[in-house]
Structures are given as structure tokens and as C-alpha cells.
Image (tube, rainbow, N blue to C red; front, side):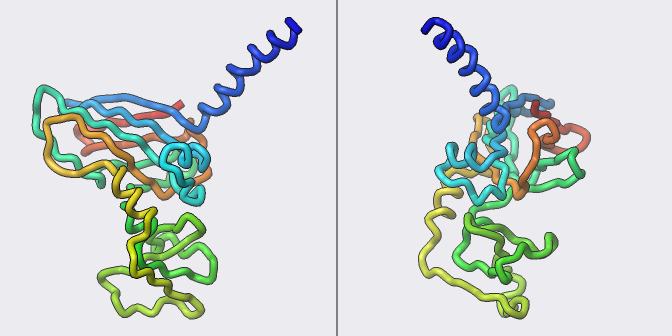
Length: 203
């Protein structure tokens, strides 16, 4: 019995360590703000955070921005970039409508070309309707699905997203990066302009 208890005691930290490979936190700062980010790179980890795995197609970052010295800073989600050393791919965050909007163009169940990709549903790849191309019928063989009611997933994602705007107070929220099948050690978040950039690396 004592041997079994010891074995279980040794196994628990190993299991915890394995689970943490899909979640990691990094911190950094520049002249204006302190930045903390926790990455969730696995579908199960994302589901534990927001209640939906987003089909395993997104890496989610839990962000906290803290302005320094009472400064007013402008939070803009486009200032955040997720980069991977695996193949050099970069991604900027999507909003709820790009991930789970009212109208989705489903292209024969296949992933659309990257330059045309507007988002994904939790069930597979989609291209979102574009305000600049309201009458585009889409590729041959595609179908358009329209829901008169707002997608509950979109509502959920937007309720948790990092808010934008000017502030001198700490701001927290989530960012949804369209990237998948990455290892934590290859990932980094870049924030801000080159001359005042914060680079967060995850281990």
C-alpha cells in the first residue's frame, strides 16, 4: 500500500506538468505598459477557458495590459501579433464575427486559401461575407448559410475579448489567433511598434 501511495504521489506532478504544456504565461514591459499573456494552444485548454474548443483551429491568449505611471494608453487589438518560429507564420487576432458570424460561406467542406480565409466555425473552415463584396456568390459548389439570429458563440467570444480604447487603468481580455498545431516553445507574442516593442516568449 505504501509503495502504491508513493507511486501515485510521483505520478501526479508528472501529469500536471504534461497538462501545463498547453498553457503557459509570460510577462514583459516597455516604457508605457506592463503586459502579461497566458497562451492556450490546445483545443481542450481553450474549451476549459471559454467552454468551446473553436474546432481546435485557434490559439487563445488571455491578456492583461497595465499602463505605467497613470499614463493614458490606447489599446488596439491589431497591435498584437502571434508569431511562430516553426515556419515563420504570423497571425493577428480575430473578432467574434470572423469566427462565428451570422453568415458563413462554406467551401465544399475544404479549407479556403489563406488569403481568402475570414475565419472558422467551431465545426470547420469558413469564409466570412465581406462588406466590400456584398454580391459575391462565392466559388462554384459553395453554399451560403444565413442565420437571422446572432450566433451564441459570437456573443460569447465578444463578451470575453480584450476591449479597445484609451485607458490609464489595467485592461484584461482574450485574443483569438487563427493558428493551430503549434508547440509552446515556438510561440511568441509581439506587442507595439518596433521602437517600443514587447516580445513575450513561452516555454
